[in-house]
Length: 125
Image 1 (cartoon, rainbow, N blue to C red):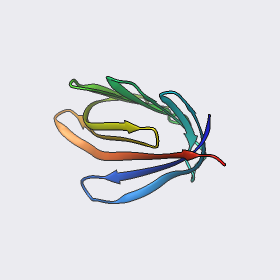
Image 2: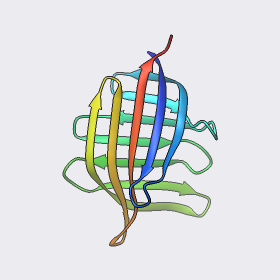
Image 3: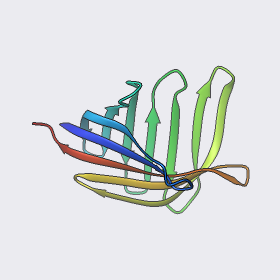
């Protein structure tokens, strides 16, 4: 089903907020596909009962797996090789028009990113 998607990213350490996507997308059950507004890169979000998978296509593709109640993994592929870090899902919620995850990315013992992603999903007229 064609929908509108607005993705709001909030860095929880700085409180900085950015709108990453704001346009059309495709929703198929628990899978949402849309593009970034600045780069045009494709994002896919799969929101299952026990995990959320975030995928970003492009020159440096990435995949972040957020698993409920246990560590997940985030990978980024670059010309220099694959970078792998741990993830920790702090919170998630899903309604028909609002999806949200709050998570951390961890390198070694250090939290290198703590953010909230909020997807506002609407009907495409």
